Image 1 (tube, rainbow, N blue to C red):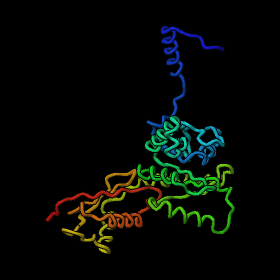
Image 2 (spheres, rainbow, N blue to C red):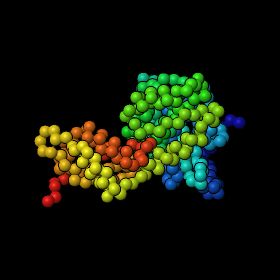
Image 3 (tube, one colour):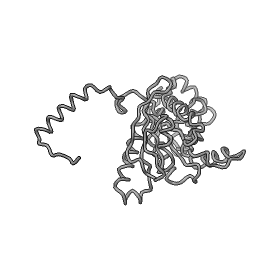
Image 4 (cartoon, rainbow, N blue to C red):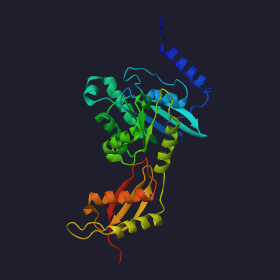
Length: 301
């Protein structure tokens, strides 16, 4: 029926009643405060994010529609997989900037998506196999990369692609070019509609997350770095020759490596890339970015 106005006293009484009722509700997994691994699903509108979430969870948890941008808010769903707790976060799609400026709701959706990326432990970046990889796809991937989050590139709607012997290889070649800034990426080719290979998504996401938690012992790390330096010393450039004294890994998520040098400010970016490649060849960091920091320190006699 029509809403009935209530007084402030009645409102307070209803609030007290609701507080009392809520005490008897079963405790719900809190996506912010729990130890569950949080998996965010991001991508531009209409790539099938909500359909993927429903397929992974096994029931209709979020609205699925052909209209782009149907999901406005980030929706958190706790679930158990292989006896471990997880939270799946479905987000609104990110549109181009000019569209965001025209619609306040879309701006809100973008903020929710960025927030979901920040609080996620691992991110599923969904691409549409039936469309060319767009600037917006790459922008979303770069946001995840810059946030330091491990991720999986999920190529959805693979059932709609006409297959030949080299289909996956040719698409992967395109990804190698477009995602050169995150060469560690892990692709999965799936169909949310048919369920094709969707069982690989969570397994791959867990692998990426586990790799982001990997910690390398200092001794073993320095063995690798010393061998890399022996093969290819830092370029002299201008000024004093650069000498790397030692390296350590103080942080994970993402794995962060700190190098102590005598002249860190002159370390060339190409040599930083060389060291990162050496680390990746020696240790399994597929699916996760890693960070290299260079600090100056006086040489010890």
